[in-house]
Image (cartoon, helix red, strand yellow):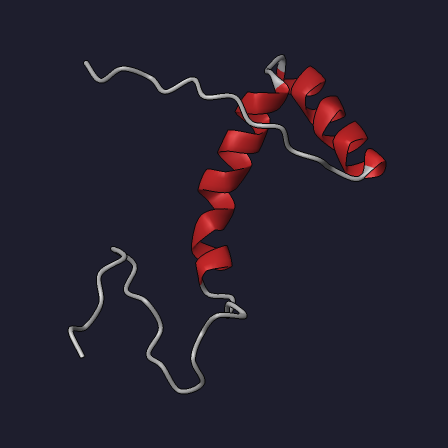
Length: 71
């Protein structure tokens, strides 16, 4: 069984967003961390579709597996 990485990281949210996350955590009887982790899993595909400021104009988008096309 793989060990779970429990690194700590501070994240900052607008107060209204944090309140909404807290209400959802309470509703589901889950931790804030669990809610944010699940939200990331749901949203990461959509977020990867957004262009990065570092993207070169005309460069092909990254593959879903993170590999390049070799060019």
